[in-house]
Image 1: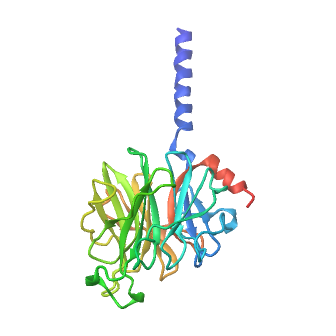
Image 2: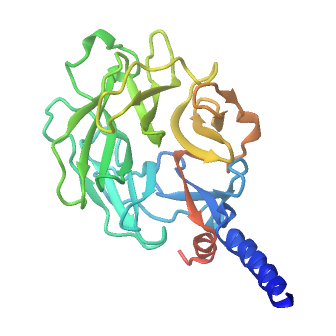
Image 3: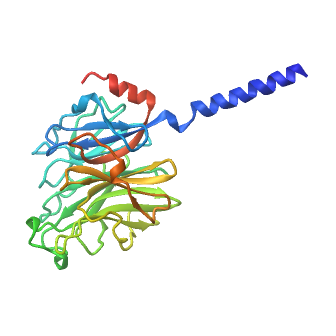
Length: 315
């Protein structure tokens, strides 16, 4: 009888230990971002609660940009791929036809930076802005998507304001970052659109985009949905952000709610909205605290062990 009781007690404590060591508290949120015009490269901050963010390495850059003619590193988007590596894409210039790419096993040591010429085939392409990357686990490929203005296209939404930029979203896919599928149109919502970010929930792909319409000014974040990653996105929702200009959405599940972080770029600070159902949104901008000078990027998770290595890294 005593042996049985001892076994039950030991089993109970083993169960508690298993759940503690596998609890999600072992993970921490990391935010990749740029400062200024993106000249000095990749910056990282972290958060334990998804609301309060602290700089890593006292705000020093983790990676100096070398790709592209202008050598900028704006809009850094980082995901962890099926190969266990962190893959990053970014904007290398205001007006080039390619985007930047590099990979890393630990966010400290990075591969040689390369420029992927995704719009080189388009004579009228003016830019390649805010690339993002999504890993399709079922089919083991990566989709890179971004916004480009092509001269002479979509004239019905053309404005003379803001240098006449008039973007639509395009994409390419790859399995190895060596060979890429031909660039194709991803989303044409009937308005000037930039800054897309995609999550998958309940078998549906949900893309958060910025309505970049200047006349009359929109400058807000909206949502579009599809059953397919590479197309079929429907009409955009009503804005989920408020009466301010917002851009660069990125999304994380924090507890039982989704948080969309974005750049209130005219106010030079970050903002956020939250939702439990991805339909009804509440502005929680007054609850988030980011390091001064943070410009938009991507939120993702790493382990506490990885965080400690980032803190101790010698750059």
